[in-house]
Length: 477
Image (cartoon, rainbow, N blue to C red):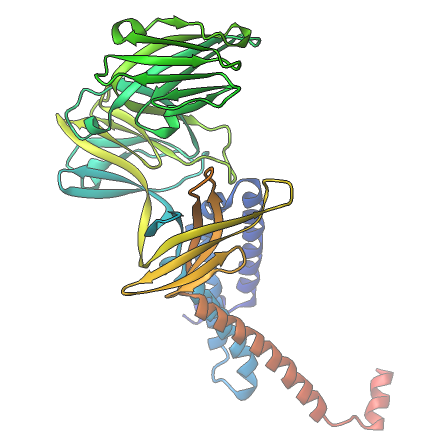
């Protein structure tokens, strides 16, 4: 035991640990600059070996302090500095285990208390039971290990067999043949193809009434609208409106000169119909497919962007039994779908992990200032109301003025513009229970260092002046 204690309190171990930490932090900084923060956290900051290295540092500091027993007044600076390092490490551990780091998205006029974290999970809904399975984030170069949910407590045969860290979505639409809740989400869909033009284009587009992002599409200089609406003046547009019975469509094609071509197509003649809208370059429109009750079917492929803030979120692939049509699917972040598992309809969703704050935040107004003559934002802020039980108070959260409430700090991170309104404000949410310990540890380290220099200065002042004979002897030496 004495030999073991001597090893853990040795200067040799301290040098090895400090060199290891310095090398690890240098590597982590390089990884973060080359990829992103989450990749650096996976390989270094949140890895088991790095936590072990920090624990070894704390053990070394503790053993060094104990090796000076019995302590004397002259050990005070030394003990304060070492106690400060231990306190600092303890505060960091508390923050990592019990802290909160996420984001809140709230649109003008809305109120929320939901914080979305970076960790993802698969939600399985069967009748009244809801079960969530965590899906750990891994870098693109790490091999994904299949997750059989049956081995994690689920009674159904569902397996997460593929995972893409940064995935691009490719959407298709299929007829809805189920009798579950998905039928309420089904809407008409039509697939059109633009052919011709100076660049000899051949582009296909799905138009779907179930989502605004699929009902108004910008196809080069032209606008494709599904439902009611009109295109911008001076630009070619195509407006397709389904009939009330869902047995056909009415279309209006407008050229950039304002000339219109209108018509009605029954569903039986829609697929394969070619329309010449009179657009420049001889562009023609071909109706490829019509689905009166359609649901989106998404597939995902690895994105060309595999790091940084612009990289898209992850996606997972699920399979039931041996797979096949209706028994396997892709899910991107925020998507939900219904899978046939053993003849039973199971609802699945892939969502970020969420935490509910003990108070609510209402976005009253978002303010943004632009640089003169541009649309580039120079500053932006959010006027919010914090609702805590039966009380409420107003506050302004700006880029340099966060909001601190009940130990939780909200920072103005970014926003999503909508022309003209409403705007969605995005706040970074942070709760750091280890912060007081880290502050205390830093103060103790600084105090110990100051006391060390002060004691050396006092000792030097109190030391007797050397005699002339001793001085001469020193010069000779």
